[in-house]
Length: 165
Image 1 (spheres, rainbow, N blue to C red):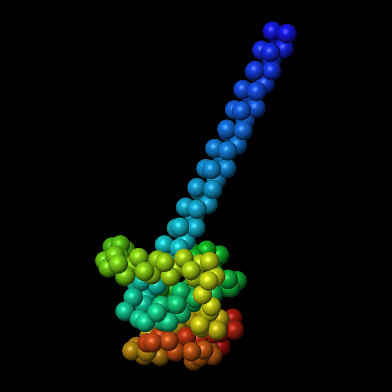
Image 2: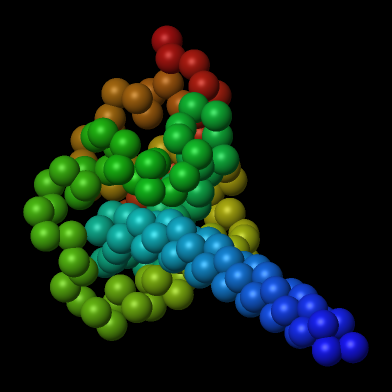
């Protein structure tokens, strides 16, 4: 009976170790997934912050949706950070040297907005737009080949059919 008890105890310890390892691995995987999501939300928040921080909330939502619409469009990369940092797509990414937002309170509000956009909690007020520009600059050449969707604040949003003339 003593050998059986010893084997049973060893078996129970082995099972407990396997369970503990599995729980640890699941926790680690969950933490890594949460970090990946937080990184994507941070890229979205920085894009909204630098592209439209002085804009009204509708304009900020619009900029966020253009970013998300690009992620969901086969012509652009598959992640928010890849879309945001794609060469020469958003001017701040190559013009702003220190990319730490200066207005912490505003950035915190934009980060919360970005979480809602990421989670699909805010409807697309751009009707699927993938481009925009500010109305205080000259109309870009690309805008002539696209359908204007809406103007939100100072930003004019455009839909692109995937072709260039």
